[in-house]
Image (cartoon, rainbow, N blue to C red; front, top):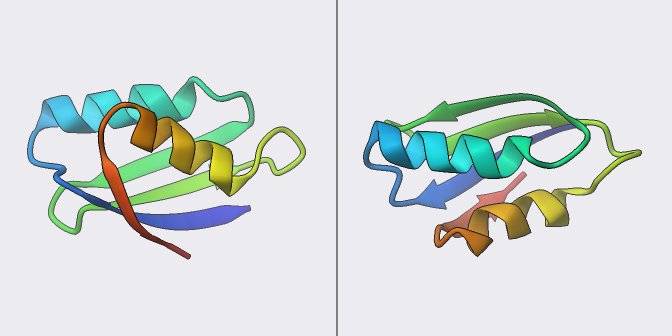
Length: 70
């Protein structure tokens, strides 16, 4: 499954690393690409292991605001 997640306040490489670590700590993440310029995260995951709500929760638990998910 593929998801595109818009997140507010991706300003630095530290933000990118924090978000990437939070997302990839979930079992079932296949790929994760983060764009600081677009403030977007493209995630490919195995829905057998997790759902998009779990990924969003991982991002919000470290202090970022998810604006949209498609």
